[in-house]
Length: 507
Image 1 (cartoon, rainbow, N blue to C red):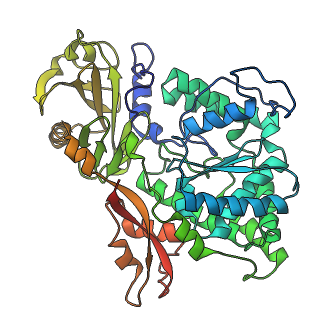
Image 2: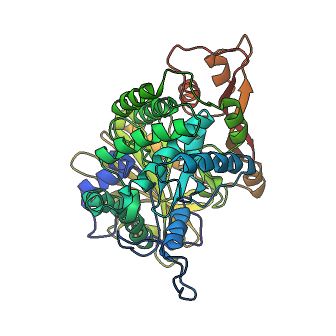
Image 3: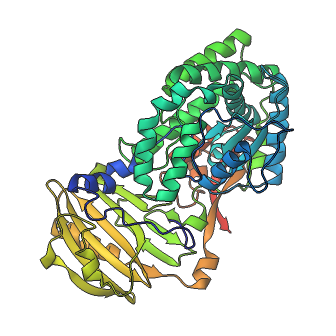
């Protein structure tokens, strides 16, 4: 959830804007749907045209107006939560990028890599030669050659001029429209549309496979292990499968690189075939230890500035509150809302906030039409941990909803539970969860810890289970430990090898 200071969002279910079916989709699985392949969830700035190109160095500049390439860069940095800086990580990526640029099909082009402060596993490129990788992707990669494979894939998109092909931009318009409608923020929705239409949404199946092929040969010429691309794709597939199992068959609200790319198994098979044309396994630099040293300590998961999830608890240090969902819910934070799902999609929740003038009572707000099917006689006014709260029930054709509007100054936090069967037990769970909404003290906020990547050396006694037991409060720690380290089911550890785990440390 975003902190104060940005543009205020209109109520996403304003009167006349949504049907009951629309609300169901918003609260339940549709809110968890993946929206795009090579980008995250929101954006900024004006709409550029598809054939926009960087201005020549000698071209006259208009004072105070950024050239297109700079404008696109600023949009992306804003969209993905800003840049992430780490001297060791940036030094390694710059070195890798230099080798790849010299080995690429068009070696005269200049490239620059930027790390984005996003937990999403993603990478992409602009036609100007700017390469972007998220810290979520860096956490998933296991060695220098794997991250080289990712960047070589993106360089291939630039050298093959994929981003400038208008036909592909038109084909992804439906995805962009869906994303813009879910963002529920007019300014960010426009900017999301702008950068997605320009160059960053889904490339075609042919383009992706071509970039994979070019990338494998590029990393080989640069001296890296050509089999690294298939290894990273295997980790990407495991990561995607784990996310889908956590959130049901639908994707979560934070799409990864697999959202509209060709199926990962096909890409793995083709990447291995290309590597075999170069030589047998064992060729080229892998660089595992150096890579792990470079990413040790990078944040994992949500940026605390946007709030973060710990099990069923959500905490937002800057907004100064915490909330705990009922047992069994899997939560995920986004810039727009905290989303949750349970019981295989039979129950869902959403927590967001809107501005409501102080002169508008909570009861009047509930009755104002932001949700259909409200049962007027169910409205109840209570106080929760010092905050005025109005609760109510709404019913649709297939779903029932329990609602809470929590007044915090001129803002209202809206807690919506959706269930297929509103039993007394479910109602008790809703009330108990609502009662957990409270302020946190400044001391609590200061003492909250952030998840970071830790690197440990396996002893002869260590097994995946023992390292998973050292992980911080994350969902399915053993599965996550295997995903982060590219370990097959049933695979053991090698004594003396270094492995990634997730630790909770002071911010």
